[in-house]
Length: 271
Length: 251
Image (cartoon, rainbow over all chains, first blue to last red; front, side):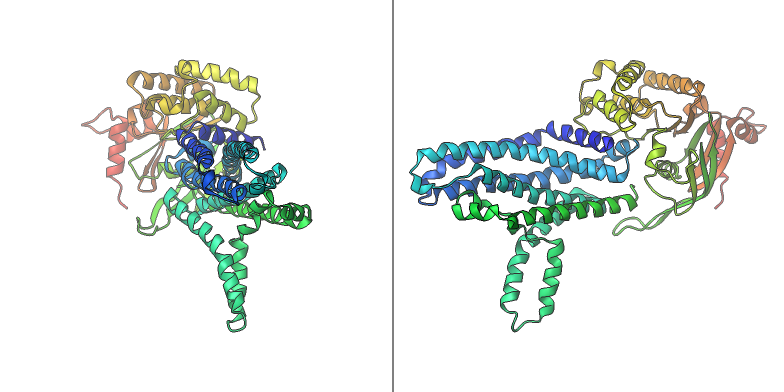
């Protein structure tokens, strides 16, 4: 555990000192603030628009971090042979995967936390400025739960980056496959729904195949809880246990993906 | 300390890249306790492959690599190995002190001991003034020294030095040679891998010559040179002996 912690710490520290990460953070913050200037364009749904806008910025910034920093950071170790210097210590490959994952996750969470604080501040500042009819409900507690759900999606993507990086060398192919994974995850539920609607005529086999695929390409839509921040019904529904099930499932999913990454990494030759 | 027994390693064919390459063809050699062995050979001879097998970065296809009585190199064996890679690259935004703390923590060293060892090593290697500068700002020679410090922080029994002189100026080279001599006197076992045969001759008593994945010679430098002594060349150097052995090789 101390070795995982030591590796996570240097991964975090190394990322924290990268200008590119701070540049991305700065741009995301600027975009978040720019939401204020556009609030006059939205009529009745102002609260929803502002909240959705903030979560969209956080999601986009998180994905950019994963695709353009996390992927590069892992490939850098391989390409520049710094992996030789790291694994010269008594660190197992499993510890390397878990330490890198922990360091990158911590960096991502700090980055997202900064954006979340600004988003909450902005929403709390805007709300009293406008009539209650345009922004009737807002729950900080549910904003936080929704933020955690967003982070769960991003961490799952980061775990996929670890899995692909453990099997393939080079940043570009890893980035492309991760992007394809993300697109399949968002498209698969739509395809499943379409196939289900034609279930009377189409073979059930295809539906089963798609269901099987969703084990690897999960429907992250169930963790999209943005509505819960703004409506009384959604807030009430969150009190039930059903909303917590996706959190449990995504945790198991991340654990399985990391286990697979460790198994692949343990077996591969570091050339 | 270290034993290669009929080790074979083949790099598989890669798509759109080079064909399969038989890098090691059943080589056997031993590094005894307190021995300093020079592993020499041309580019592609199999030196780096041998080192990667010792470090457990790769696995042998056939044969055995025994490191510190362990039948397979593992993270636990690396606790007793100090490895200086050929290219010293680290996460670029760390400082030398952070690197040394990381190396020490991985070996479960207490913070106080890490600080003491760091002081000694940084002073000895002449980079104590640059301890808090980022490694990306270091020159190649300074990075090599930082890498040396990280390899020695946990006081290992076995040292694997892959081209330790690369990137060093003549003064730096002389300092490193003195340091390696000191480590020899402390009773460390050293596997020294270099193209610079003058350095190998100055540092080691024994050599193993690798050529195209085959072991052509394993023994003392004095015996090798004596074997190559002719009437025309009465004082054959390691360089002469190496060239003669490699040129005389018939697959």
